[in-house]
Length: 122
Image (cartoon, rainbow, N blue to C red; front, side):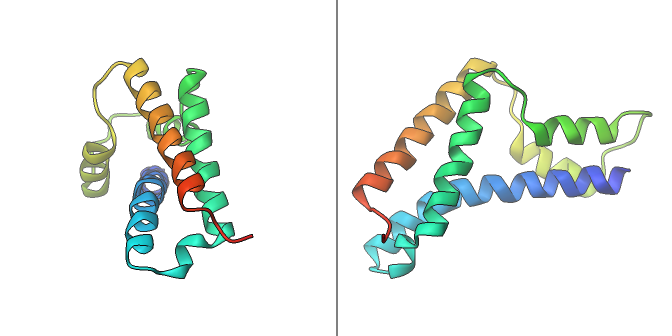
């Protein structure tokens, strides 16, 4: 099951990259006058993804992907593999939960303001 836990971890990292990288891409694409940054489907998915993250954090609900990964890794002592060691080190930090909730809500606000400043096509 370790391979499945690693797959969940990689999926989690890709979602983080989509959310953070998506915002950067919207700003950069706007500056470079790329029309794809106003793609409604992309923008709705981006806003929805960040809204889910912020809502879970604000309600103090653990991330389902983190819970699933933890469940897949239980049942014995297994040394971390390459993927788990590097992606986990990049994804997880040891801060109080309230700091993450505040950061996620602030990031959601930035994404929402970006929606207003750089609206998608109708």
